[in-house]
Length: 323
Ligand code: DGY
Image (cartoon, rainbow, N blue to C red; front, side):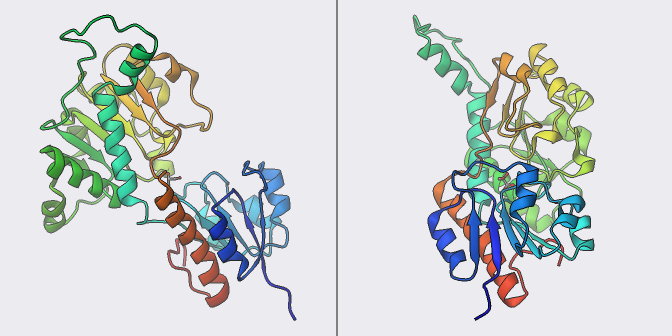
């Protein structure tokens, strides 16, 4: 009997997903869920034909050269900026991601962060917990209006469209967006959003949500110049990738009250957080949890596992990035 192919699961996932993979493969996984260092990942990948990654493991030419048996890398994330897709294609390694299954959950969180930021939820809770609340008063933690204010969206993929729907239908917000290519008029009508140029988006949004993919061109695409275009009463929400925003420029804008507030679920050096961000009160910070509900994370892990199974047993992945 020939040995079953060996795969690696680079981070702790649900036991039912491991069980499913074990029906097809010899599975090695991290016993404690702690991320491996790049050197350890390289070592563990020896002899493996597939790996399930979480979006934090960098897959590049150097790693692929050291792991010649590798055929497929399945990311348990829709974002795949941890993949050097060109290097993967030249090495004949397929990359897959986990789109769709997280769209609505991530959009829910985008809205949660927007509302927490605009309505100063965490700032006021800290104040209360610190025992500083002495009396009800008219302007205590007066925040920004959400309903009826202008929602801006940078990046209009699936998650952007799901956020637009929430804003337009749920909160009566005029929704403007900018994207590499505009939606069709029918799609715009369906999600209730209007295409504008980039400068107009920054200038007119009361709440600007970033949901664009992180590519080299998107690095610090929200910098000092863009922040300077925004209204001083506006909020900025980032649920995409930290590197899209120049965090130092953001801190300066928040400190100088050129921007009312920011809500950030992602950070350029995560899990490390720029210490300056921790010193400004008008920012809500969460640890990359936009898709974190159990059903959604299970669906993401299952899709990643199904990609490994489909590709390694039938030669056809479900959501390939570089077929
Ligand atoms: C994604 O799916 O890209 C989320 O950010 C989780 O990493």
